[in-house]
Image (tube, rainbow, N blue to C red):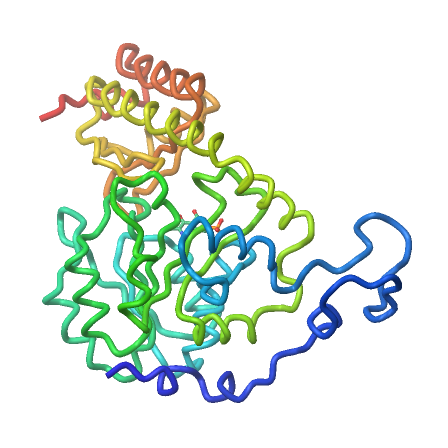
Amino acid sequence: MFNLEKIVRPNIQQLKAYSSARDEFKGEAEVYLDANENPFGSLNRYPDPQQTAIKKRLSEIKGVNENQIFIGNGSDEVIDLAFRIFCKPGKDKALTFTPSYGMYNVSATINDVSLIELPLTEDFQIDINSLETYLADESLKLIFICSPNNPTGNCFTKETIEFILRNFKGIVIIDEAYIDFSTKTSFINQLKNYPNLIVSQTFSKAWALAGVRVGVAYANSTIINLYNKVKPPYNVSALNQKAVLEKLDNIAQFEIEKNIILNEKEKLEKELQEIEFIKKVYPSEANFILIEVTNATELYNQLVAQKIITRNRNGLVHNCIRVTIGSEKENKQFIKALEKLSVTPNKVNKGTLNFKRQ
Ligand SMILES: Cc1ncc(COP(=O)(O)O)c(C=O)c1O
């Protein structure tokens, strides 16, 4: 049986959250002399520490209660706070799969938590057999599942994820940063079935607000209360809250832009298949595509020389480059650059990039 009390660090269990001025008085007043603010200017007041307006809108859109929502300074904060709430530094462990998003490892290291990184299978799926031996380890507190996975672009099966949720006595964080681009449904609607589930989403990808830094965790209210206790009091600025609320007021535009990106992805996939030195174009449930070539580092450098920046993932997936879906103009420029490389072999790419696809 999952027992949250056994999973939470004792010091966090006992922690009394900081109570800010804006936590203690809620409502409208005429004179605010409680928070040592400056009476001048337009951004002189502290923001709502509980981001009530955003939670209200998200609760309507996502069909969850407001007390099941935590708003973070990007979903990177959702990841970091999970380590702080659940893992005793130097003692507890977390687990994820590789290749995946690099911040699980960085956050684990910052928090002095050892991270087990289980290799995905050749087709980038989770190998349940290799995972099973770890599930009973009582010092293992967190499992991160990134679905759609960065950088491979695929989702994991519902059956596999549910198997982990059922059989692991710790917390499962499903990182759904790219879920809005996917054909698969979010695990948010499984919150009622799994008390150990946290679903992480972000405004940085499909919502086009990476510069704003707002991420969201959905979980049962007990877990959300722990997040609220541990977060800095004013972790989301007034400007950031405003930007998110404006976006949420125009969902039609969000849908239009998302569909443009999905159409562009389809076009780009087809065009990439035609480039002779590209060995493989991996299917993607996200707003990026992973491509395999014979020499990823050379290709990356040659694109940089043409002022086009992709992500060289060679260290993670052998000879692979991850390319984000840009605007129509940017994608055209990218394809043009690739075509140029395949028809004008020069000193660098000769014999390395001109590879016939099998
Ligand atoms: C899988 C995944 N999770 C989380 C993040 C971080 O998102 P945020 O901008 O919300 O911190 C990223 C960013 O690239 C990502 O790829």
